[in-house]
Length: 639
Image 1 (cartoon, rainbow, N blue to C red):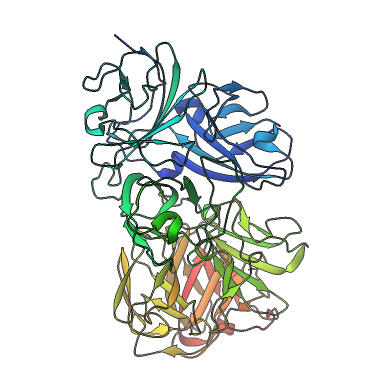
Image 2 (image 1 turned 90 degrees about the vertical axis):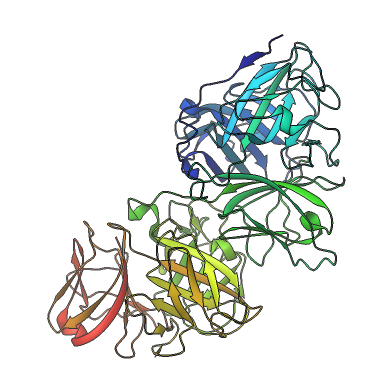
């Protein structure tokens, strides 16, 4: 007996590598009560997929987890925290677009002033599929009598099924859930029950729904939707360089509530993690993501598929690193308990083609975010041209910031270092202020990376995801005082210090770097045992950024960076003698005349009465009368 099947076509081959930014998005927004477009860059109109929308702020009550997909159509909603059947409501998702989706004005997805998150999953081989089917009523514990095709090209790792024509539980099956596979319920906190024999009923072309603990996979003439996630951490290459999604399990090791953590190695850094305790009941499903916040050493922003509660930030229970994540505390790491997870890789995975994709300069705004970049921002340097401290903060450590001009430990300011935006950082500054200026960076292969790590008091190889050998590395101790250490591959014999004019000519703190690691030695500044650190890594991308060096000649010197429209940002440091870390930018002026500059290692106001830099289409020109002759410099320039 056959099963009636409806499944849209899926583009691409199972052996083709994908970039995660083309198939997955976390998008946060504030409701307006007016129809609007959500631009994620993901083609749902052509490729198909699913949107999971959740009300975050809860200011006017709880808000359900609503799921919409291209197989059932716009405005067809089902709730993961409810057994209710599918319902049709206008003003929800009104269109699936080639670059995202459109929202109506309904309060479930767009209430004015309320905060929401939309997770988008595009159909793609080795990643995700959506299938609808009609049950045939056949049930058997031994035979595969009802087979549902999917287009993953690999065996699923996680499958969620919901009956849509009437009330029912959400069936959640995970390949790592026990030796034979057991059922969880997405709308409940229950432990695993029953047996679905994963190894028998799931493969790289289809899955069977003929047997379940309550025979609710396949009721005669009932309608269902299935959301099918791959388990493919290694990707088509087999080495993890193009793996997008992992579905696994671990056993908790926290018996004291000290948040020591269980390390889960994925081979890449995740941006989204769904976790459920499977061995015992009572624990909610939990979703964390790096857009809403998984700060290292801070409280992750949690949402719960099985309840409509607002976002919670009450505990430190997850952190991400360059190769996976760390589960901490009783919520997701209780000693001896088993947990299942689904993790999705951080992006972007594509090398930037334009500097505007990954770098921006803005002055302070009166509305949130304080500084607008027009991309997801991962690090920012905030300055005041009237003279003040230079603050640097990052998405990985949001809510905390450091100062480039001091050796001070980390400071806390949830507003100044807020990264809960799609287009910038900072909130509640409350005024336009042209003297407050920010340089904003996005992590991207070949261009820039951020790594948070803990010192081991020895010699440590710290893993990064830059994808190339970093040409400049900044390291700062977070948990205590210690000077900034700067490694420059153009001058490998020294380590500079970002907060002082001098440099270290021996006893280097950062010694070497490769396309996957950099090495730090036992020192207060870079690798003291148990202390926490942050590292910022920079490299050259043709036409986008340039890390380099030059020697002044006393005459005007053209520095060719390979750009076409000149440099917007230039950071310079003399390595042959003491001198400030000097920054020029086009927001304040790189012109054929006097050029304002700031010094990142001081609190001094900008200097604006010298002609030091002139514009050059391929990079920048040094005015010889300002720089003198015979001095060695290193620089970072961004187009």
